Image (cartoon, rainbow, N blue to C red; front, side, top):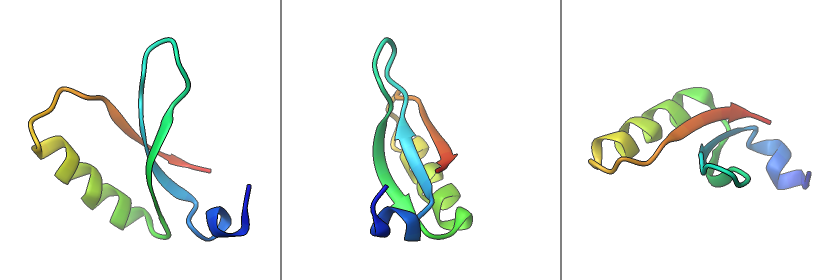
Length: 54
């Protein structure tokens, strides 16, 4: 894990069946990640996202 990744431990990942998760965006604070996740879900796409702490 790089230093810049350590500064932003909260990340939103796209859940892809039968593959690894793809990191969409990283955040320093959980509140920012939750707000961004809400925006992604409101976009109307049927793509599964989740928040992880790495």
